View (spheres, rainbow, N blue to C red):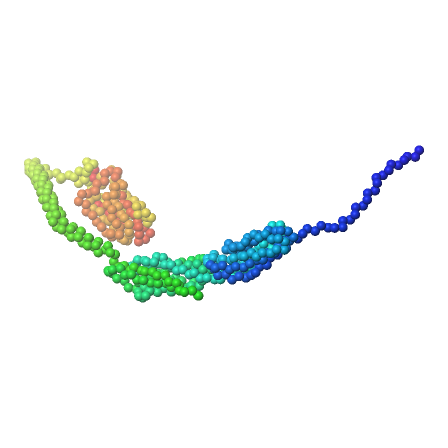
Length: 454
């Protein structure tokens, strides 16, 4: 059997092509600006108009404002208009540039913007410029207006350009009495609008006076700029006397004090001091007399005792033929320094230059005196033949007995009333600090004479 075929879907009828394309209505505004270049004087108002036409098919609302630098000082009346299709209206735009240095002279561009509420993309901007006229406002000030001086004064001159364009200014200081020397650090300058220039003005009076009343010396500074009247700043210098006003009263006060002190000296202090001096002199004389009398009594007693001993010795000699003993001198160590053998020796120095004046080179006798004897020095001869400079010391060990400057002598001798004694073990040391030698070293020397006892 043959198989029956299934029926297929019925064919779809083709859609007819669109015959009409829908077009949206065009909306927006047409604007016309009455004046594109407006001349304005600062502080006054200039007015123009903008005509707004509703070019769309619907009722529309249009807002009008100004863009650009002139926006801050522009007024739009009215700011919003409602227009039927094909209807138009005029909007007044008033420009009032202030009389201020903030608005510079010259062309200030602006734009009048008309915005549609129904079709924002259809907004329009009409461009123009306001030609702001220049104005000049020059101000001059002295700081301080009045100064006080003896020789010279200093002022500061402030030149202020409150106008709306750069200003070239010439400055002329003068004084009506011609008693002042006036000098400015700049005689001409250009001041930008809204700025100030600070100049130094030095004022010096020609004449000076030591004493007298203060003198008031007026002066004036005139500023001259193109197309504007001159501007003046007046000042005054109060010239004082060269001598301070307090000096004369101070001198009088010092004179009074000096007179009072002299009077006090001669009437009170001098007699008191003289009386005290006399009393002190009398007391000192009495004490001296007592001391002299005591010493005289002591000397008389010693003389009497010595006479008795001498008489006894003489009698002993006469009786027994025995020679009187010599008087002995005993050192602190118990050694009779009047006895013993004589000795002399020399110490020669060869000291290098000392960087520090307190540094000493030390030298001893070679050969040294007998170490087991007491050395008694009675005579000293110091020699500096080359005229070296520095210091020379004679010491008992580390104890300085004598110090002399080398530059003070070439030959110097000492004869000791009380001899120097050096007990066994004590060294006689020659120490030299060499400062300015005639050669490379200082070569002073010392010669000693005395006895060895014990």
